[in-house]
Image (cartoon, rainbow, N blue to C red; front, side, top):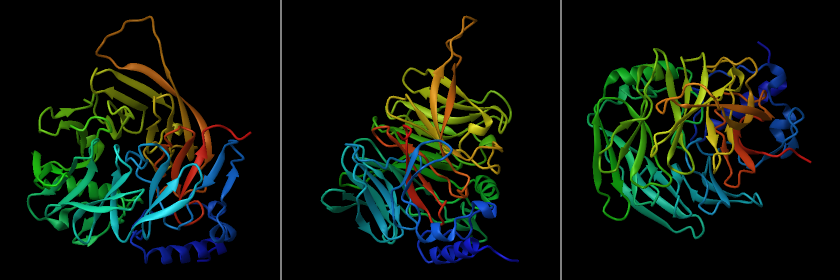
Length: 441
C-alpha cells in the first residue's frame, strides 16, 4: 500500500503524539480522502490565520502547542471577567488571553482538568498521581490541595460558589467492566480533561457493556472549603455520568444516566441535599433520544440534543428549570451537530457539525455553524404543556472538510460572543482555533 507524502508525515506525527499523555491509538479510523489530508507544509507550518473562502469568516489558530485542546463543550473554560480561556497541553494547563492571544503555563505535569471557577479566576483539577483535587489561581499561581478523591471515585464538576465538587464512586471493584476497558485492557483514549478528546473505535460496544454491568455506585458531593466531607446524594446501579453544576445555582447539579441514549432516561437534576431528583425530558415515542445536555449561561436553562426518533428528526430542545417552559428548535439534518452551545442571553447558538459517520448521516454537515433562533407563532390550538416551536437558521462559519471528526470540535462562544472556539486536527495534531462570528470586512 502506498501513501501520499502528507499521509506519511501524518503517520509519523501520530506516532510521536503517542508518547504524550493523551493516547489516541484507539480512536476511530481516519476516513478523510487524500485531498483532505494536511499537506506537508501545513504539518510543518500550520497556518495562523486566514479567511475561509467558503464563508467569508476569519479563522485564527490560537495555540501553538501540538496536542493542545479547548475544553469539552459544556465545561466552563473562561474566567469570570471574560478575558481569558484555559486549555490543556501535553505538558499541563495553559491560559490564553482572549484579546492579545498571548499564552502562559499555569500548571505543569500530568493532571486532569475539571473546570474554571464561576466565582474566581481559578482552575480546578485532579492530580492523578495523588488522586487529589487541587486549585490554582490563574493570576498568582497560588496552588492548594482541597480534598482527596475517594477510592474508585471520579470527581468532575465544581459548583457556582466553589464550595463543593461532585463525582461518583463505585461501591465494588469491577475494573474490567468499566467503560474504556476490554478484558482488563484499556481500549478507550485517555484524556487530560473530563471527557476523552477522541471518539473510541468501539464506543457503542463499550457503552452497551458498561450499562449492562449494573455496577453499584454513589453520586456524591465533596466539600472544598477544608473538611473534604463526602455527602452521598444518590445510590444507583445505573451508570451515572456527565455531572455538571449549574453556573449560577450552587445547590443544583445536573447529571445523566449514561448508556445508549435510546435505552436510558438520560438527563436529570438533583439538589445538593439529595432532594428533587428529577428527570428533565420524558420521551414520547420509541427510539426517541435526548442527550449532550448543557446549561445556558443563566444557569436556569437546560439545553439538549433531541431526536424524534433517533437519526430521523432533529431538535435543539430547552427546559427552564424554574418555569418548566420548553422550547424545541428544529434543526435540518445537514445542520445537526455533535455538540451545540449558546451565548450569554441566548441570542445565538453554535454547532460543530458532523461527518457522515455520525448519527445524522449528513451528506454535507462538516461545518462549524452559527445559528439564529426563531420562535414560531401560531393562531391554532395551544397547550401550556406543549413545547414552544422554534427553528434554528444556520450560517456557516468554517468549512471543516479537512477535519477528522474522530476528534469532536466541541464549540463554545467566547464570553463577548465575538468568536466561536473549537479544537481541530485539520493540520495534523490538535490545536485550538477561533472563528469570528462577524464576517471579515
